[in-house]
Image 1: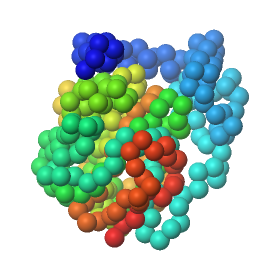
Image 2: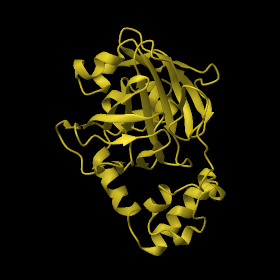
Image 3: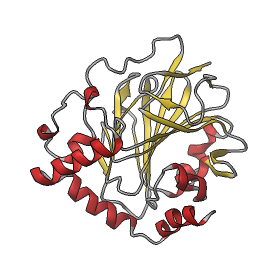
Image 4: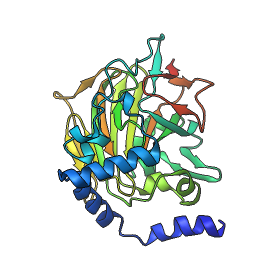
Length: 285
């Protein structure tokens, strides 16, 4: 780690992650016109947000910064693949890593891995279907659309909220903080699908002041100190490919897991590739 990288990464170990994120939450949910319009304008200009994609393009019309950040897209702007047995990309963003688990380990960056057991809150039982399976990690930057959608049709079986830190999830941090995604706060959603068990893991990050799902609403904040889980039986939500399943406030990461020999990634779906919601990223077998 060189000096420049160290100055970006090491201070994160001592920052009061949750306190900063709670402060950010209050700011982003404020309906003060001067504050929210100023924040929106800064993000649009600094990150080059394309407001032509948004259903509402007038930044003054949003009730709060959070309403802008979780804005809807124009209908039909992200058509979902209709290829046979297709698995669709669940978000706009960039592929951080993609591939297959080896001895239960998921690639985070060169020389760094974490396990499916760690990612899923220490549960061997939850991780068992994915031990030799497939994974994809997709990073959503502040300029991206921040609603998450179903890669294929599924029935929700369990949701787990796992407390943790809130390190940044950008490239520099993921290359230098060991087990990053298994350390950060996250919400794991476990589905039964035509491709077998599928997990969608919504990973929090510094200043990510809200993770929510369409069936449960806001999961965090506030954070907790112990793992919480919800099991769904007779009332299990059934979501079709393309249905909205959750959303972030501020940039973060979604990780997708499938079981062994259940699917195959497309050859063009690779690390560092920019991706759009709905495009084909693989097929189930």
